[in-house]
Length: 175
Ligand SMILES: Nc1ncnc2c1ncn2[C@@H]1O[C@H](COP(=O)(O)OP(=O)(O)OP(=O)(O)O)[C@@H](O)[C@H]1O
Ligand SMILES: O=C(O)C1=C[C@@H](O)[C@@H](O)[C@H](O)C1
Ligand SMILES: [Mg+2]
Image (cartoon, rainbow, N blue to C red; front, side, top):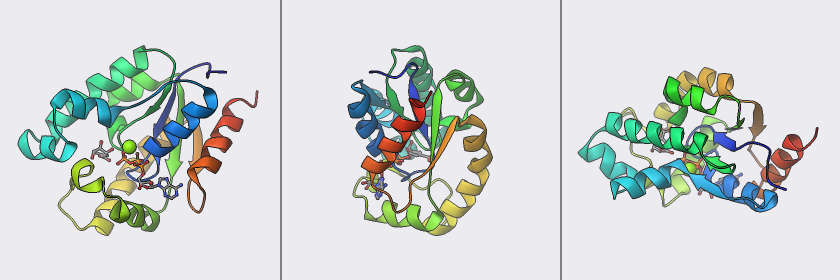
């Protein structure tokens, strides 16, 4: 059965939003979408090139428009970009949906991002600092925002995407 409302997955880069959105959609038998995919398709280039050519602010404007459309659209599972909830308009847009915050420590995030071939095109530096320092700084800044938006928090460390999706399904269909 599809979920009663759209499920938005939020959290830092590498916490598994894109991976788990697909697993979860399969379990619910519904569609899924990824805000980064839509932004990249519209821009006609990877996130890293958007950052390099037009700047982060331009990317965030595109991302905000995509989040608004996804929030107003049909019920599905949505993987958001790691910084999508920075914009207050996007926080308001997903208010009232299921908002699942995927969590991991900076160490695990750094390992996953370093091992992921997609990082070069999808994850340009946000601060200019080294990877570990950036993750620690930005995650600390964003944690209160993720926390405030979330209706469910899920630890992803040492667990497979399948196990994580199964837990989310169970939590969202418990009542
Ligand atoms: N539970 C997990 N255990 C181990 N590796 C994982 C897990 N979830 C995701 N990964 C791996 O981590 C990397 C990043 O995953 P994914 O792209 O799903 O993250 P994301 O949260 O969507 O990141 P972004 O915010 O940059 O879009 C991928 O290589 C993926 O295979
Ligand atoms: O955490 C972030 O700010 C980002 C995460 C990625 O999903 C992309 O949306 C982009 O690289 C920015
Ligand atoms: Mg993703």
